[in-house]
Every structure is written in structure tokens, then in C-alpha cells.
Image (cartoon, rainbow, N blue to C red):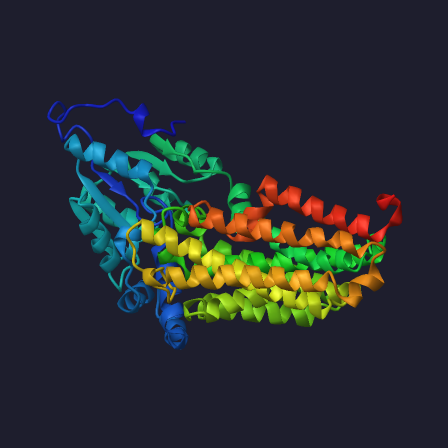
Length: 493
């Protein structure tokens, strides 16, 4: 099984008779493009004009070909942003250079097929669905037999293509499981195989963004600030809350990737995300969202956290579809989404967060939210863009955002300084003076994050960045050590 195009020996143009090989007929969805164009058009239609869902349902009853034709009228796709399979493209270009006829034959509507063909400039002919005939399966086989007899090679990826491969002289299989490849071998001569890129479990794991779960560790903070290290019941309740937030957050991340599909494909790094790259299909993403919602509901219901998770999910949804596009409202919403994790941790463990902690974290989380936006804006500015996709900020807003974020960081540190000399600390700790170490530790950590941001090293959420940063881990360990020393006389002797 060959997985690399370089395994095909190069033959100079003009040294091979163009008629020596049969026409090369290639499918679009799942083969040339690692996605389904109809699914993406339906998604774009519903995101842009959700009220058209009733028309969409009527189109479904009028047949697949009619559905594709009508959806294409309302939701055009940009062919430059589609996730093409580079291996298939290279193969087609090589065969084209040898003089072989290349035909795009697809069940997608002719409108999208011709747009793709015009963009790539590879195809001698285009055969596609036309609003009446859905060119899939046996219908595709009949059309190709009528055009070329059995003298054609077909490149496909789906079980529906088995009847087409059976009618072809040769087969090329792309992005199909090994079981389907074996079935193709039994009915046709396989010329070449392009195996799927990556493993399914890796794709699913990447889609839920487990590296982002570190933000949900905030539910454990109320236990630490209450010095309830030995309360096993609180730790168990917080652990369940942590899992509920992880499931909810992952669901929201998938939703975010669905709504930001075009924007992610324009981004140099985000284009590699499972949905943007075509590694994860839209139906699979929706199924994952449903499963994650079920997990989050079950976990949160068991701890009485369901209303809080519902509020978190609702605000996250609004942020994903609209709030992220609103000037300043986006960073304040992000700050609140951090804070709600603290509230949830206090609620399920019984250790309510103090007003001091609330004040400190309000400024801290606002600083981190602004830091995230500054990092994105700096990255966009370096690439030549004047603004972020689906964001209201411009390049000239950068100095203000930096000043706002740094001011929030210092405000949080000032509140920390006021807290360590309050009467509440005197009551809770045997050696409250030790807690003054919090002030330089907090200030050093935030200043280091800001320096990393201004240098362009902050490529992700600041909390995620900190979870992968050894200096941040050392500071966290120092904070815990300070709490223990201040609380227990044994360590101070």
C-alpha cells in the first residue's frame, strides 16, 4: 500500500502516449477535498440565515439533487479555503502533466464543482449533480460508462463508490478504511491507495482540546484557599465538577470550530484543527457534541451543579456565536467564564469564595482575557492583517489593550497585598506574615506572561500556556508551600 506520491516514478511530459492510460475520474467530497461540501454549505446556511431551516426541510423532501442545488444558491463556498488532499492534488497534477485526461465527477452540485474546477485548473471535463440527477453510486457509474465505456480509472473514498469501481477498468482509493480497500481489490484492479491521514482516536482527542482543560482546575481553588486539604468529600465533589466543566468546554470548543470554520482555515496554525483540516466530519462533530452534552448533564446533575453548568454553557454559546465579535464585551465575557468556575468549585465543596478572592480574580481574569486578545492581535498584525477574523479589534487598538491588561494585572496584585494584611488572614493563619510572599510571586508570574506575550511567544490561552510552562509550575508549588507554612506551625519552627 503506497502512501506517498513520490513512490510514483516521474515520467517527463511528452514521453508517454496520452491515450495509453484511461481517463482519470476523481470524486470531490472526501477524496479531492477532505470534507463534504454539502455539509459545509448547510452549516454556512444555518449559521448565516437560521430562519431558512424550514425551507431546508422542504428541500430535503424534494430530493437530494434539488437540496444541493437550492443550498448552493444560499451558501457559496470559497474554493481557496477548502481542505484539499495534497497527495491527491499532486497525483492529478502529475498525471495531467503526462497528458492524461482528468475528469471531476462528483455528486456535489454543478455550481460548486465548477467553482472548484476553475480554481484548480486541472480538469478537462466536469460531471456533477444538476438539480435533477444526483450523480452518486449507480447513477455515477451509468454516466461514466456512457461517456467512457469501462475505459476509465476512478478515484473515490466511500462505500457508495463500490458500484463505480466495479464499472471502472482501474481503481484509486483515497482516505478510505482498510476494510473498504480490500473490498475494492476484489472487484477492480487497484492502481494506487492514499490511506487516511492520522488515526481516528487522535482526531477525536484533538477535537475536544484536552490541553484546554487546565482552566477547569479553578474549581479546586476554593478548597486550597479554605485550607481544606484533608476534606476528601470536597475533593471528590470538585473532581466531578472538573469533569463536568471539561465535557461542557469541549462541546463548546467543537461548536466554536464549526462556527469559525472559514476563519480557522485562513489562520496559519488553526487550519490544522480537525474540522478545519477535514480530518473530522461535520456529522461526527455534531455526534460528539451530543455525547459531551449528555456527559456534562449527568455529571453536573449528580452534584447539584446542573444550573451552573447550564449558565456556563449558555454564556459560552453566546460568546461563540456573537459576543466574541463585540468590542470589549468579549474580554469581559471571557473573564466571567473564568470566574464561574470558581463559583462552581465553592458551590459543590461548600467552601464559598471570599470577597477578597472575588476581587483579586476579577482583575486577574480580565488581565488574562486581554492578554489572549493582545496575543492574537499581535500575531495577525505580524502576518499583515489589520484586524482579527470575527473580532472587533484593529491593529491600532494594541497599545490600549496592552495598557488595559497590564493595569488589570497590577490591580489584582494590589488587592492581593491588601488581603494578606486583612483581619480575615489573621484569623485563618498562624503566621500570616508569610503570605506576603504571594505579592512578588503573583506579580512576577503576571509580568512574565506579559513579557512572553509582547515577544510573540504566547500562542494560546494564557492559562494553557502556564500549564505547559515550568516556571509557572514552580510558582504554583511555591504558593502552596507558602500556604502550608503560614497555616501549620510545624513548618515555621
